[in-house]
Image (cartoon, rainbow, N blue to C red):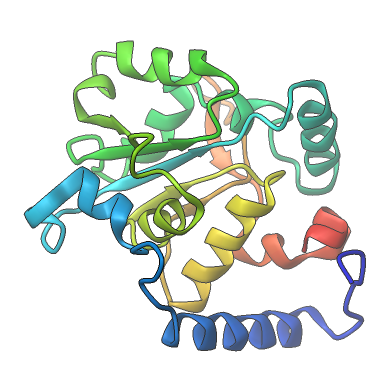
Amino acid sequence: LFNYQSEVPLDEYIASQSRFIQMLFRHYNTAPEDMCSGINAIFGEERSNVRYSVIHNRHLEGAPGIRLMQRMSRGSGCHPTAALEMHPEYIKSILGPIGMLNHPIVLITDGQDPAVAQRLLEDPEIGPMLSVMPQSASWIGGDLTAAIMSDVFIGNPASSFSGFIAKARIAMGFGNNHLFRAKVSTGVGKPEWVSTCGDACIYDKNILGNMS
């Protein structure tokens, strides 16, 4: 079943996937663990009023992740390693223009590449606003909910977890999903980071294959 790819037109596929996800979130429960545990751990009583961004760092076991990202790059035009490395420049190219560098940033991570968190924490702009999801609160449900409910989501298109977060956010009408980006020359000044593929790309079998 994992390898099955729907043959229906893309717009119909997106609509059906969104309906399934909406139904799923109408009936979630809090047992045995609270789906909001990640949000509660980071923000406590301020959780209802805070605007925040989530970065999902998924290293994908090193070389296999790079090969998978290269495949995504060929299909979407995105940078072949930027979403794996999550350098401060990359993050600031997203959050700066929309005024979110002055709001909390949460990092959820598989922990395979500690250098990612270290670089972000050491950055003078990102570091003071960054919280790494604590191990005590980090689990699939808690990380998932924190990312879905964020104002901005920065993910890795080669990660099925990032893909599901993006699909859930789209199903709920949330924008600011950033997975496919590349650095391009504008002809004036330095090259700039831009989105190369819209929200529909996360459903596109020509780009993601059976991960779509």
